[in-house]
Amino acid sequence: MKLNLEILGLNEEILDKAKEYLTEGYELGRVAQEHKRLYRLFTEKGDMLAEVSGKMRHLAEERQDFPAVGDWVVCSIRAEEGKATIHAVLPRKSKFSRKTAGLTTEEQIVAANIDTIFLVNALNLDFNLRRIERYLLLSWDSGANPVIILSKADLCDDVEEKIAELETVAFGVPIHVVSAINNEGFEQLSPYLKEGKTIALLGSSGAGKSTITNWLYGEEIQRVNDIREGDDRGKHTTTHRELIVLPQGGILIDTPGMRELQLWNNADGLETSFEDIEELAKECFFNDCQHQNEPGCVVKQAIHDGSLEQSRFDSYKKLQRELAYLERKNDQRAKLAEKEKWKKISQTQKKHYQR
Image (cartoon, rainbow, N blue to C red; front, side, top):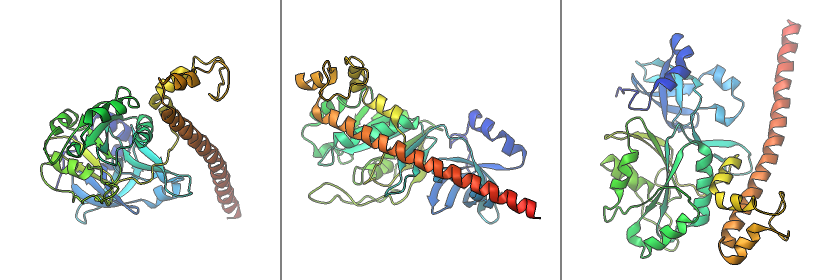
């Protein structure tokens, strides 16, 4: 199926980034799926199965140098085969990233070139303010605008109370309540669904992302699983990230539920997400106050008088420690990468002089 790339979000800014490549005869595509270094691209000549070129693979130093779902790429297309070769990833205007699961300190780009992030949280036992804080921290750092979607409203008897709780941690973030069972609230999402605009759906497994995708698309294109009894969690309905073009306009990137959401370089996002604590800290007597036992600590006073919850402050300190640890690991990784880079240069020069 051929596509008008403007429907996928192509604009003058992207064309300007690609100008040099286009004059060399390359074509544009947008990454719709990623499968172990194989990619599905949407191009003007149709859907293509693609892989990166040998040169690009050789020059890539980190995982983030490879394409991610939502990326704009330049490629050479073999339309008769339905295949393409990706030669470069265009600079991203935004990206939602997390640290890869496990012990490896590496960035995983969940979705790229997004305008809005729908943070989906179910109004059942899955409702968790601390998890939402973590998602907001990553969202503010992505360059996209977060919007909170509270799903499964039919399972909650105190919706207004939950919204009030959420407003204490999500300053200025739009909150929309929806119910698929009652077919309620989804009309609130329509303003975000504009042609060429990209929305990423993020949330834990069983939060209702696939149900929202089906509703916005107008038919069932994503399978929906029942939630487990006992913890209100679901199995992974979506097993991979996928870019979906909506019939009425707009683009969705549906993602698998995240059981592990580790931070990735989110110092700026911490200041935005915890603006209330950051503002209080400015009023402390000592500029380097650790908010423990120092005299004149406004943060501790706020906790004492109840204007700041201890649990929110604990979450702030925990995320602060995670970021500090990650920064130390990244510094160590950067030093090793620089050492490896110069080792490769030295080997190349040695081979040159041996000829």
